[in-house]
Image (cartoon, rainbow, N blue to C red):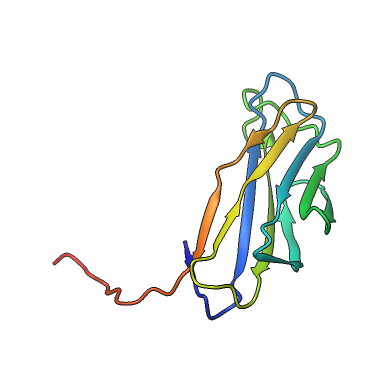
Length: 137
């Protein structure tokens, strides 16, 4: 996605997760290292499907979302009960130069299992000139 270099755009990130394991998940933890091109002081938790605690480490820029005692069902037994999400927003730093890339990847941990790595989002601070809306007639 291209973002406007003349404005401090707000980004909204949604991290979905689902328990496809063979046991209920007692705890789910999501970690997300916030890009230095995003203003950590504007971080805001928007919502989550389950009860959540959030910790922002301002030194490492890692945000940790913890779902303690979530008891997330197995997808084979309860498809809707196996799903969850967290939504947060954050604004880019002001005056970023054109071409600045903002990347984001989250890591989802079900109990003591290795992380499930999400897709990486890429945003580029770019002015889009000369684009026209072409339609097929």
